[in-house]
Image (cartoon, rainbow over all chains, first blue to last red; front, side, top):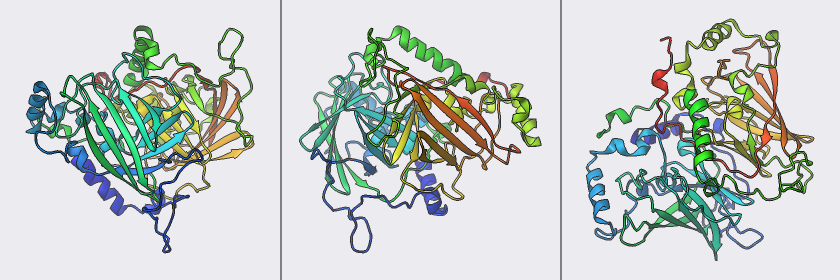
Length: 253
Length: 259
């Protein structure tokens, strides 16, 4: 994971940026007098009055490492087995058992990768295109219900709806082997994620993420993840399994 | 290759046969599909149009997988004129001597146009400034920019390239460059180089049928461009599955390598 963060930084530093659409001018971006994007301009809204979430976003990196970074010790309401497993993972002894170490991304860690993702609203479905792993989520907005007893997947099944100015995404059906953060917070097959997207102004988005998993936690708990808009650029391609050298150095079996 | 060609089909078939299909949105009725009196999708109804008069290509499409093994299967042998090095490596790959090195056998991206002929469907979403193709294959995506930007000059080479599109009448013309030359164009091993330029022409003939004309222009590997025509079909009333190649991959160690 760290190796790839470094790799991405190197790539950004040495390659002629214009050649990769890294410096396109994103149309529709409000700008200050000097032409810079005005990230504190008001939230853009559609003809229906709802906030438009489209754009390239990047999450504050601390939540990848520790989804509970803003919580006080003792605030995460673990079930005993979950706390035990979390502690066992924390000392690094189980690094190999994180599916992400084998280039398998999963929710909710996918949203927290240190690479940007792009939200695109289309009729009936909102896409999240992730630079990390060059993969995508589909969040259906056509009124369908969440499936009952779905075949578990790495990203789960997601539907979204508006509640006032909040766009609320409900996700179930996530494989229980995904880690919720690099520190190793576990979950069960009962995990139900509620993501509440709140675009406060042009350049700032919060995701209030509620973890509702009665098998792993005694009550639902919520974290607030902050994201910033990355204007005037484009996603890069990221292929995890290409020249992967980290896994062999991780502990565990 | 095996992970892609065989396991996927088995997995997909297994999911279809044994899973509660409705639970996975695999049997969801796609709205706005013209239907015959018995409720079945009418795939020969006219192609849908958008308010601006352009065809709407959006939908889940079953790739024309008949071109997965040999992209040039319909062409006369002299239509694909390879550079000598390309002919030599193609001969070895077609004989199976390099199966172990095929990128997608190693869970690396299929590249373009091989991904268009994947054994699993892709979903095209057409928007005014951008067309996105979501590929069930390895759960990957391509962005095709329609905002008038030009293809990059001397881009950093990547697996799926850089793509821009424009309309030529009722045909969406997608031009791509910036490939890394590592992907095979098909399973028999037609090679490519970083000079590869791919032109894909998407033409929705009617509701359920697409013509996809693909031109391979790669002077590094071929002495002249060559063109093939695939025929994707609409997959109505279903949804993409999740396909994670690196999960429980068991094939690669059984595959041949010449090294």
